[in-house]
Length: 157
Image 1 (cartoon, one colour):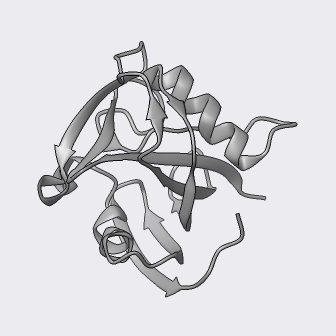
Image 2 (spheres, rainbow, N blue to C red; image 1 turned 90 degrees about the horizontal axis):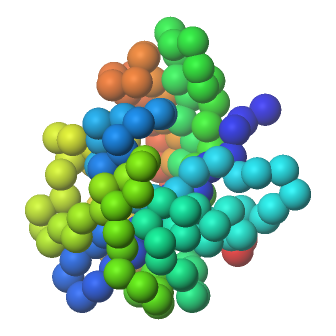
């Protein structure tokens, strides 16, 4: 069974908020903010909780734009991870650094693909085009994608 995670990408005009992961899974990479869905909470509740914990931001309306399944082979953990991707431009508070995350606004045209998860290069264009999608990625380790598929489709909330 896949571990369920959330990622939220805040938007402000032509900027996107990313978080530099200072520790734990994904350490040293820029990504959306989020984390593991806890027992007893919905995926959207998890997204909201993680935004508050990781950057001190309260999120209003969330729009799910993708679900990505990553299967990590030749690693101890985590195996298969199902990541629910959201965006929002409706938030309260200024993102602030926590023990786990250093948030930073980037121009969308300057997305740091060389310091992000490798699958971002493949699904990010769908996101920019406003297409919702479901993707699956097979990794060898954490850095090498051996195969992938992205299918545009409507997503349940």
